[in-house]
Image (cartoon, rainbow, N blue to C red; front, side, top):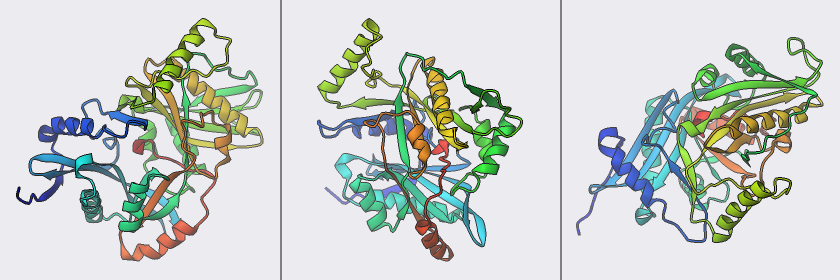
Length: 378
């Protein structure tokens, strides 16, 4: 058998769509004892980057076989490192290599090729996110490709049940107009690292269901409430679906039994797990911000309100939130510890020589209290 040259090129929807779906199915194979989360792109392989300002997907081929994929997006964000407060950043996501072709340098070749595209578009920094205990990913990006640790946010996952959450009568809720939400975010959250300059485009996107504020009843939102909180909701389920695979039989049995008990005895406090074994959607809460002594309770009230919204959706099974690792708001956001990730890992790399010194300062600076996670990159 002769040597086959690795070819990396741009994704061609007409030629690669069917091949990508077959590739995704092959990537589902894994150890029987592990639980895997699979993505259904609903026939659109670039759905996760389509809403970004600039994006690209690359595919890797050996012979006539698709063996790897990677996606990237570019945007302008705040970094707050003098003399410039703005930087163009490239986000890396969706790196996948077929299990039969791993440990051949295909993953690193895909990343390097994407970095070349970043550099051609004048990108200052490349960055990516992975699970902290994903040894293969950390080894590739940190040890081989010189990325460094940047942030360790917390991912909080809360299942959606058919029971409506109680909303306190002492709290007033208000849906904000897009212009008002944008102005507030720019005033209070533009000081966070990687705040997107095009926040208005995010809020105006059809996938953004709205922005809500909470404050004590009896006070005026038009004035300055003694305590207040706000958040926005993104309907990720309209882009792609998720499902679990290779889950232990005990987990499957608990899922079915808990749902049955909920129907037969609603007063029993057994947590009910939604049916994760069929494709499902999810809501992503972003732009969580709060001020005042009662703001923690207001965040929890807003999350309950979003849960009640999600419970009316036919396929939204979980609500996901990502906040800074040092953000105390995580203590007030309902979530299941078993489904959540206490330390996600964001890594960053300077793609210009003049940015390497500022990168050192950026990664050594203590993380800010609040973190704005772009819902387009979920």
